[in-house]
Image (cartoon, rainbow, N blue to C red; front, side, top):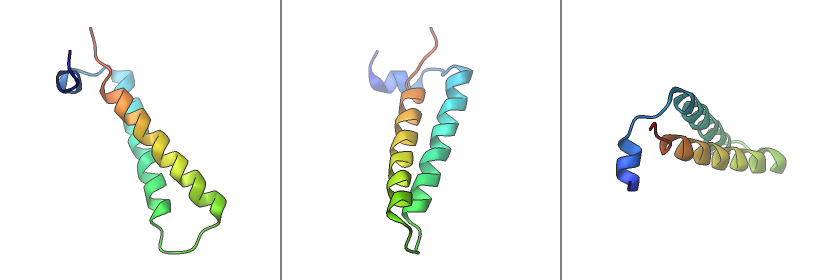
Length: 67
């Protein structure tokens, strides 16, 4: 099964919820990174990790299929 077929295949309910959580984490991280005010370094670095983790969770959850 190639990646396109896998992405289009039905996703189990648990992974749909996990995908949505990952998208929310990525959105929060991206919003904090794009903030027009100066934030402490720890906040911006944590937001970067949050955005990456959210993207990975979303991608893995989307490619999980039912058998």
